[in-house]
Image (cartoon, rainbow over all chains, first blue to last red; front, side, top):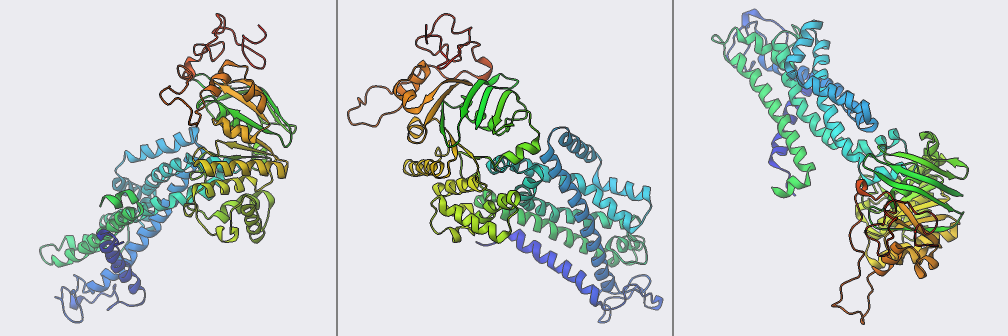
Length: 271
Length: 309
């Protein structure tokens, strides 16, 4: 069977972005943070394929290192928030009763705040730093994963094999581990991919506002905010990081959609 | 070995099981028959202390000196699977589709018996062999969807036997299977019970299946145990009007049956839980109803006001 188009395009874009980020660990054309004022606002050339910025730093190198930073932050934050949220969702489904109510109402409550605004608020309250940006992005992911995990887990808990496991003397923890988690993994993975895109966007937004990655560490959001004041002078400096953010977010979204389609036989048949 | 007395399970909507009493000796085979919604499955689950949380359970269930009603979850877990095991109706949904057969069977062995992986797998293969699955060793690596319905039901039985229970509760184990496969599974259950001296409770609406396997039979209606006794006697000389109706309503395959005549039925349907009559639950559908049947609960065996009157 042919994989769906969104999966192919999505994984290609994601591979491109992740590959670039990985490459920057070992090689970039220039030192991304080296300032050479004499070389500022260089047009594209063989030594600087996308030119240089207002301080003479190589744009390609900055984009590559920025990709690495954005990916790392989004990855750590989403995995952190995703694990906590998933654990809470599994707990809610396994415990039932008032614990389930409490966890899910808390999740509902946190949905009342726009996620990005909430992250900005957290970063603003606790001070702008990389760690706080990660915590803020992780935090907004908790209720998302709590919901996804609880919804799929609650479905598994009504299955015959859970009743059979209970009748065989298995406790809630053992059933969660043996039966619930394997069945919840697929929807959680899809959600991870999609939330990863949100995480990249959130990191860019926080860094843009100066609440995330601090200078001189390059990041797409910071490059964008630096370029903002120079929009009439050197619009290309805003275009490149913007394009990178778009490609990365689009890639992860398409990948998430594609994974979901592959995992859903009903959807597959309808196509 | 098992003594149930005065067991009642009440939901907000009504009483789904009323004052059930029965006993079961080691190695004995008991059938429980009745229509859908008569409380058969609930009775089976209650024996494991697994009645839904929304229900209030009164009365007593004692298994080998261990009280089940009101027991701590931890004690019940030690009972479940080890002493009393259960087999369910749908063999497909009773097996996690994501797990291999070998892992499914080895899991309780490793948990309850502390067996190592290799030893548990050997034992799993031996169990699959015991329930009549050919080529058990290669089965261990298969997933549930790779097997037929009858094979899957054999796997769930092997799973139930893993810790050598003293009592196996089979809740409509053959409903989802075709007739020939069902007959084989029933023969297997009977065989296993005899060989292992394991008591068996067979819950079914199929009187023929019950007659094949069990020594004793209990008939349920609307949450009441209306009649119990030796299987041959209950089926041969039914005394409760409901039992008589149930037996008369059995479809008979025969060339001489008048095809134009409608199949005999018991008029009416099982009333909803909230609309059960306070007296005899069968009042209103009973062909030999007495004036006080609706209001006074009949006791004894069979539980009928016509008896001994």
